[in-house]
Image (cartoon, rainbow, N blue to C red; front, side):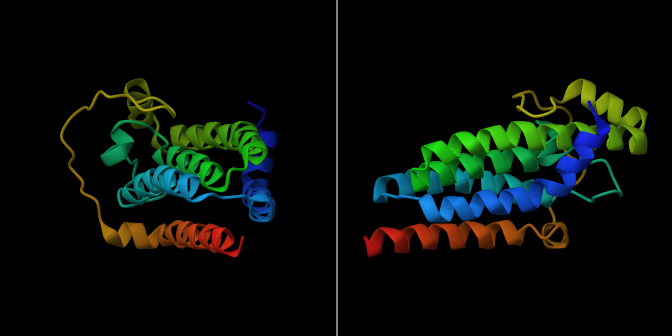
Length: 181
């Protein structure tokens, strides 16, 4: 992995994502059926992100429980589901393809970079975790019972409510766009 590319993608992922979001708002052509289906898919991603955030103590402890017992990157997996759901909701197939390319070329280098940082920070504990849990696509295998529980305080500290607010705003925007047609 090219570290400079990964660092650049980490810096630019939010501005590029916002730009893609603006294009989406302009070109979205939602229908009631697509809004229902897409909202449900995005809601699954939002729920996954919410639960993951409630287990995450960034830079303090290696998260290995809750959704982290199935995938090392439940937040990014949740983001992928949200992106797919929003694409379906807005019937923006071309931008959906752009989003998938964006996810692959922007987020996967960021995921790799974060894995290297966790490897440096947590050493052997991360190595053992990485041997048991896949990087992105989840496994059905669950290991030991969780020692740590979901906490709303972590959810709030990780500012995951911002994703929920974005979801609500997107659904409302699409519903209004349907009504105005």
